[in-house]
Image (cartoon, rainbow, N blue to C red):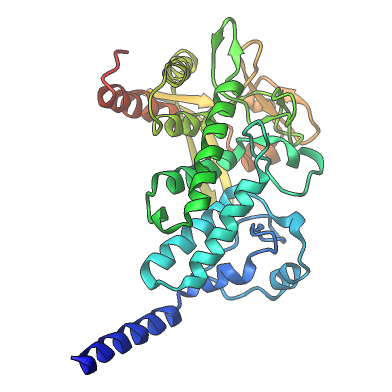
Length: 340
């Protein structure tokens, strides 16, 4: 019996040791690129996300080794992507290094959140528009989704340290409060959300030259979908219904927006299509007119007036509101037994 117990104990130790040595190629690269403060940056040459399917980039590795925390960001899904990837890798390999790295990333998210619940695009880098509360490219929603999964123990996040879980619950509620507070009132009614907000006043602001202060449709669709994941309160119900009504009232009927590639160059065209609807990327807050920014900081009200470089280099329309109205909203109403 004693020998059997020893054998079982030895087997468990050996199994544990083997599991700890199991490695995931992508996760290993994620840990290499992680900054000292726990966050991750973007590829320095083209400002895009790091492609972890590629070999280690010596230039990027040199930047990382410089320990420059100012590179840490949640822009373009950076940091959120790595935390999700590491948690998934831990679930497969049980390699404790991956969980430790993910938890360090989670601590970074918690540290960057403002007291008002918002998240800046970068932290601690506060230059130009990087300190603004940022919904642009779903930055804040991606971060809050990670915290939501931790708080709820979903998508493999049940393994996260209990203390981080409690902190994530608090941060999540602060984030939801910020979302509700920043929904823009328009003509006496709630509309949708802007891309960026002043980190102190929570008033909408402009960001890059071609990103004017405005209502942002693509990001607002994802904000509404995030709110639909939460327990229904009177405030959340009002917020969702108001946003969906805005999308119904603001659609541009009879058009479609296509993006194709010609010799690696994006070709973006707005064309007529019966039965289809689009929304401009940006809408003027006072007038609710579609607006388009240009490199020189000017604002145009006609898509064709935008310089060709910006017209082809930026997505100015989307059709995301269609699914939100016809499918997501209807499912949410039915699930929560709410009348439209």
